[in-house]
Length: 290
Image 1 (spheres, rainbow, N blue to C red):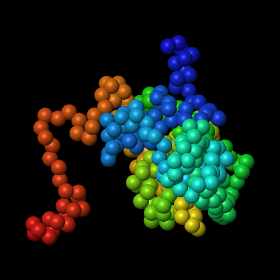
Image 2: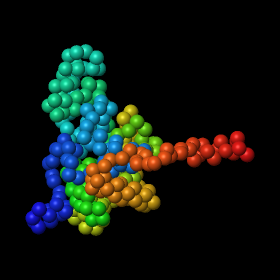
Image 3: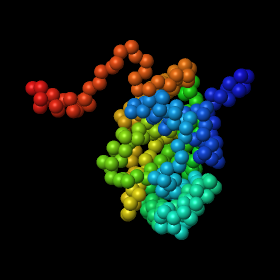
Image 4: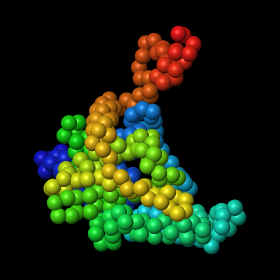
């Protein structure tokens, strides 16, 4: 590799207009989703399999993709059909034709639903101004190199809003339940506290936030009245997420160097022991062993 090429390989890169398909197909960098899959309850072996065998589009994600398109103005095209369900052969054939064209197929009532969801976002006193048309840039692809491990990373903010003295990264998530308690559990269950600091790190590394970046979650329920919860992660949760990212990056670097992708156990000479979950062991020990 020439000196110029080596420098380009570590310099941050910001790409506008890159398709989601090309972004997710990249094998020279790792995303937030990939880092989360390297850690428990997943493992490197599962990460590598999923990377090498990308899953087919899932119906449950169609509404989320469509809602993003309606709110952000970017993303896969939406094709609303006249059908009430996908049970007929004609409906299924049209659905597959739409997918083959790179668009998101929706039933008629789903088209009405995502329109109502977008309207609820626009009317929300906090989320509406955050996503005001023309006030930000959607779906920018950002690449940079982690200096501690030399691993190339990538993020793709839903909405990057650059204000005087502040940059906001606004992330829209559709969910079954957008109540604050449910949102807190979703952050834990899906590792969104890892997404937050990685996106901040990438945006700042690319020079897009000279005065710092704040990451804002916008959660929206997929059922009427399509309620919205806007939250910012507290610092302790962000610190935990960043520490998990650092561990995942080290694991990824080691796996890449050795081309070895272990499961949960890794190489052992003896069968490991396993216990009850901590909370169950404490409860049952008090009842049965005291």
